[in-house]
Length: 273
Image (tube, rainbow, N blue to C red; front, side, top):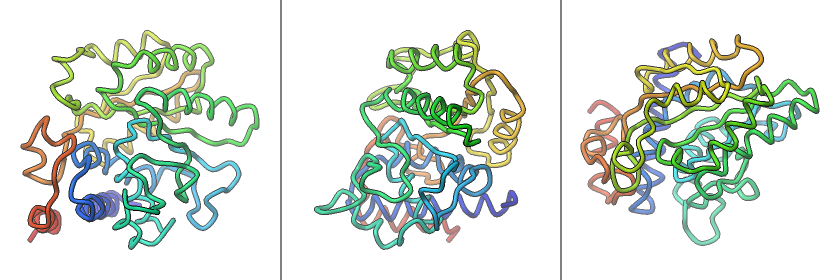
């Protein structure tokens, strides 16, 4: 996809997120919207995948460690045709195949179940090692949250990946500066974040506008040229990006009500009406 197509793809992902969470009436809106542009780049251009053959050998894999962004993952998978969009309205309801946090045993296209915050990067490291042993040529992608980066397991995984020189691992920090109940800097300041990852022997790229598909795409392309190190792409994002009242909610956007009137307002904004 070209830049304009990626932008349109990201907008459709956001529309799906709103409809998905709106069907429940409440959910993790902010952190789902902030990664829509990243998902558009990965699934629209960078990843070697086939929705018609979701178990394809040697496919690239994505681990969404910040599991509360499950609605965003479902939204991009539905947009790519892994399953019917109508299923988005079943999220978190009885008998659904779309639980609040992703489950690889329930949802077609999900490569790893989301566990407690901090666990996903370890899973991605394991997948990258497995891919290297199999020599299947896959790239493993992981998305972690900035609040999640307070977890010690993130840094254990980081240390091991750096020591193992896992060049087939590309991770992203959704650096929207907000976590569940306060600013990240107030809970446990991560800065200087780039320096921390570099000290663990990772190749580090910082994207000034982490909601710009062109900048994200360039960063991923650049990362793939660097050998001998795993890659961390720090995305400076806006929590709730794309919907004014979610962006302005700040900390309150982590999980927020989405009644029908707010759903309609959000959809009008996204459609430019």
